[in-house]
Length: 334
Image (tube, rainbow, N blue to C red; front, side, top):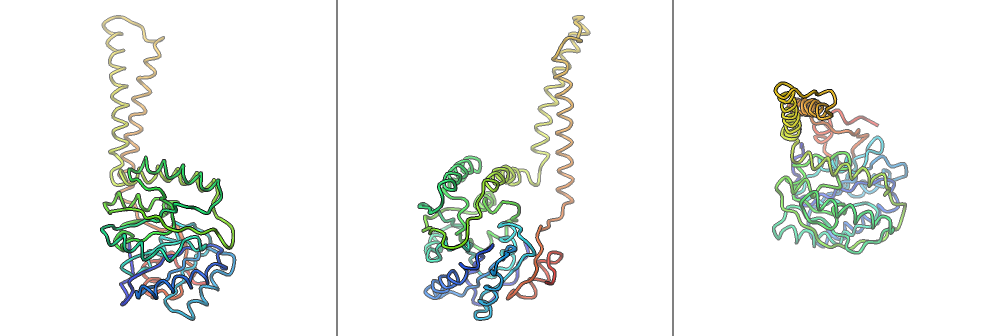
């Protein structure tokens, strides 16, 4: 992943995706600056406007005019949280990267505690909304999601999808985020060999706007759990998965067919009324197909070119190098 050169005196990069949160942004900015002033750390705040239809971009512009530590990346339309994080991660220049939601439900006062936990020997610390101020349907869906994610991912966390996280910069440099994979950033980091833990954090009730949660997002997250499980194990060696399945199927079909051929040739048994014959042929065909899929996957892996599925309308406060070298075909003038 490309990234801009580190700017002097920037210790923290805060990446904050926002979608129609104009009312929350001034108060969120006030809370962040108050915390950072007490910590006496250099910082930048990178707001990624994910195609808002309200005044979010104008509010961020006003904040930038009074404080050049505020930066804006504005998408041409709504692409989702993963794309917003991916764009924000490309623009960071701090040693530590903090992500949080823009709806005031995440508390910037938790940043010093997250940093302390990170410095105790971890690379990523994820917030755990132990006491949640969300509707019952959202809390129940989250419990189910976190339970199954823990089982399939091999990492035991209570709250994978908490927006409040702190990373060492090398962690985000190792991740490519797209689709709904923002839900699985701790899983990706863990599979990449980084040390991951969680910390209980305060969670506030929503003050403005409406929740963006829906059951459709829950379903997409379930499919992306399968995606991340596949990619982290077999992304660079798809034949190891499909080839094994294909080999087992082919071998089963071959031995069934061999047995039937022996019975026909040496025991004079007819095969026209033997369903086992069709099973043997089917397994051979399926085995060849799986093996072919694995070979095609290997070819695609060797030829594929990484690309991001988002267009950036404009950047405010980001260095020219960022717009020129890291967005390339994904940037256009307003």
